[in-house]
Amino acid sequence: MTTHALLVVAAESAQTSKTVFYILGGALAAWAVVLAAIGLSRPDFPGSERAARGVYGISAVLVACAAAAAILTS
Image 1: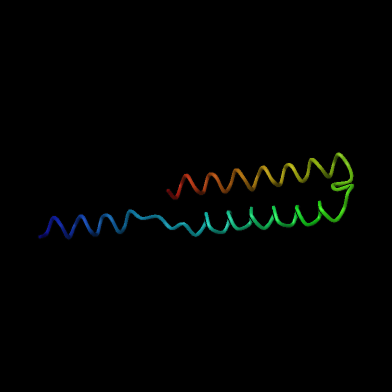
Image 2 (image 1 turned 30 degrees about the vertical axis):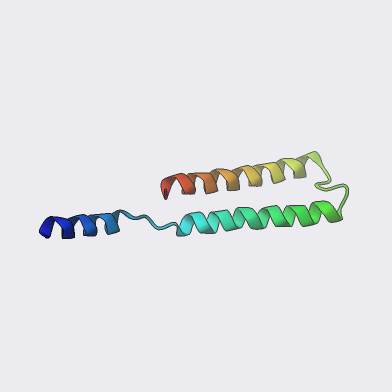
């Protein structure tokens, strides 16, 4: 009985919070929706090469952060 109780407590304390992943995943999804809305309403989006690099950079950072959070909280 004591061993079982210890295993249950250990299993519950080993669970990690997925809140960070949910926040970063939601931010990535929101970013995708915003980009789609702007891209569909403006044919010349992003407008310049510098702006395109900014969009690529922000997208890459959000993807990397969401992927890292998914791996770390799995």
